[in-house]
Structures are given as structure tokens and as C-alpha cells.
Image 1 (tube, rainbow, N blue to C red):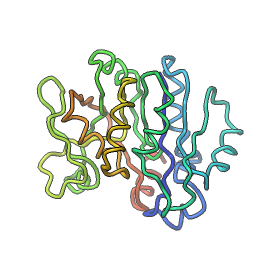
Image 2: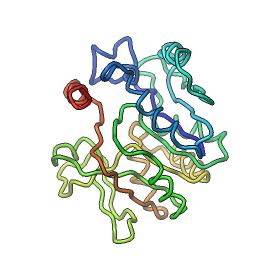
Image 3: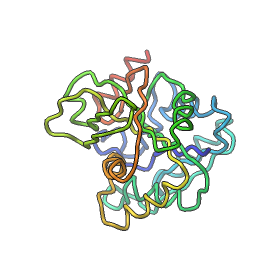
Image 4: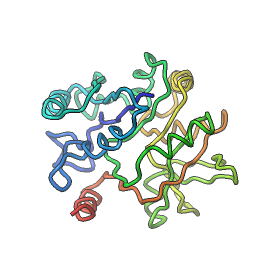
Length: 240
């Protein structure tokens, strides 16, 4: 299995903190956010390689960060963007990366912090042998509006997935943590070539679950999606 960390955005909602620094390298309790994600990956022996999706503007900062770490089998695949205006979108970046991958893969956002380890999620994926999305309970419906509203059936199969819902009724929310079988790369390419929205990975899940079974796996802990100054402060308080 291969881990893909999504770290190619420009975090406009966090400006000015991220004008000259990628969000994943902002500190939380004295460590860059991405270190917490790498810690989770390092625990899973089944994950043989980590690919970090970044952009040309911030690639050198990530390389400097990695040079001071002991993480093994880690590589960067930058997209060609150098600014917010030229970004290619998360889904296109995933399609580009997975076009050369012939293994199952787990996708994690570099700005999502959570307590759970990844072993149970990966076990569930191998039980279902279908795409799996990590789910958690939001604190409020307002939080759901910023993410993805999800409903599942008794077997855990996703029966509704709405990205950025206007009037959510459920507090069950989809995270940007996915485990995919290798053949999902074909679906990614199909999605991109069909001209669907590329900025949010959740839009791809909204499309994918209608094509075949996609399952939800409940996290035991809440997940912090660091997208704004307020959520960044919340994360700092949470860890301190």
C-alpha cells in the first residue's frame, strides 16, 4: 500500500500565515502539522511508500523539512502550479499521481489532525475490498456545511454524500481520509476527463459512490480540519 498526502494547496483562508509558507508546515505544539500525519503512516508496516503532493512554489520548503527528518521511502510529486490562480485541483493531482501507481493507496490531507491510528481503517478496507471514507461526528451542523454530509446503511455503505451541503440534517461528516483499491485510478481519470469539479476531493466521492459501493468507517475521535485562522487556533489549544 502507498500513502498519498495532499499538501498542494495555498490555504487562502489562512492568509497571511500561509502567504509564504505551506499550511502543512505551520506549527502545532512545536511541530509542523504534517509531522502528525507522518507519525500515523510510520506505524503501519503495510504502507511501503509515502508520496507528498505539493506544488512548485512550496516544494523547496517541504524538501528542507524532509531533510531534517528520518522518514523513509518518502517522495514528492509537485504539480505545476506556482500560485492560487494556477492550482490544478486536488482531484487532478490525485489522478496524475495514481496514473503511475499499481497498488492500493490511502489518501490523507496534510491539514487534518485526528487521534485514531490507521490500522482499523485499513483492516476495514481489506474486509470490504472497496473504497472507504473515514467518517466522524461533527460538533455542529455548521461544521457539516464546511465539509461533507454523509449517510450510510446498516452495512456501512454510503447512500448519500453531499459536499458542502446547504441544509444538512445529519452530523455525520466525511473526512479527507480515503483508502482506495488500485483500480480507482481509472475512475479518477474518467472523472477528470468528464470535466467535473476538481478543487474538492469530496466532489469525487459524491460521484464515485453512485458508480459502485463506497463504505464509511467511523473514527473514534473528532477530526480537526485546519482550514481557517479559528480552526488553526482551535488545533493549537487542543494539543497544548
